Image (cartoon, rainbow, N blue to C red; front, top):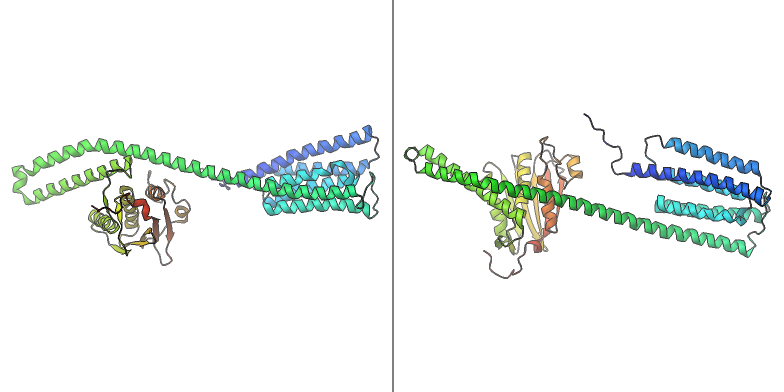
Length: 437
């Protein structure tokens, strides 16, 4: 079964459509409010209003809202420009109704502030200020139409020379500016908070994933300990058997199997240590150069056919603790480099200004763009096998636990580069002045 991916995975498509639907609902309320206001003004207050012109404005607003509601049936994104134009239509309709019913002296003129508030919530900062300017200009235009002698169907008195109307204009402009400024700031704070909460939830989910993996690894290590011990005993008995002792080739095979069993037991011990307390007391103290040299020697011993070029640029050695998590992280990156480029791998270690940088390069095909975009997420692999894609994910988590970063890129000359950078203080023991083991 083919699963269709959403065209807008970041959620902007859904948010834009929801905002447009909100404006449609508010516009129906505005249409109903205008009809009721006209009925009350004519029947209740006996005001002479141009009913045909005002009904025409209401009819055009209804047609536009029907179009907007039909627009929602299109499975397309709703842009900021479209939302701004929708609010602009509402401002134009309100301006026309106010012009036909008293201009700037109409008490409903402060409904302009609702448009500014909606713009501050739904739109970006620049378009919000544009809406504040448009509404202020509309207010001033309504004042100037009467001031310059244009005939209004309903004259409630007052003009630009009236201190009351002039004060209303200044008050409106001030309210529009404050609304745009404070609501924009509040919405930005809310969005930033939501982004931080989303990041925390993502991190908690990743850490929970790591906990489950640690439990599984610990359980597997305990379960495999018994059969490995049994194999070790059996191989020891075989080594002393007369038939094996008399055959040099068979005796060497038994020794090789014993060495591999001991290596498996060492790996399981490291898994148990890492699954428990990564920075626990079982970790030994060493130096940066000794730790890195030992790490490279151990990896070369496990991969004798590999061609690893190792360069270390460390001027002043320092005491550190042998972190099993860091060692396994470097092993994962080197294993990926070996698989992508069996011909050559390069490891460069640089200690500068208290920052330790480990750079692993290869001459393989490089990372595909999807892997680079989703770096640090589990099960992102191009190998097409279930359960793959955890190496970089775990390495990313270990780097973060050391207050560092892990980044990947493709080289211009071909191949890939993975850079691990973290402060050396993350590996520094409390009694750094003591002797290293």
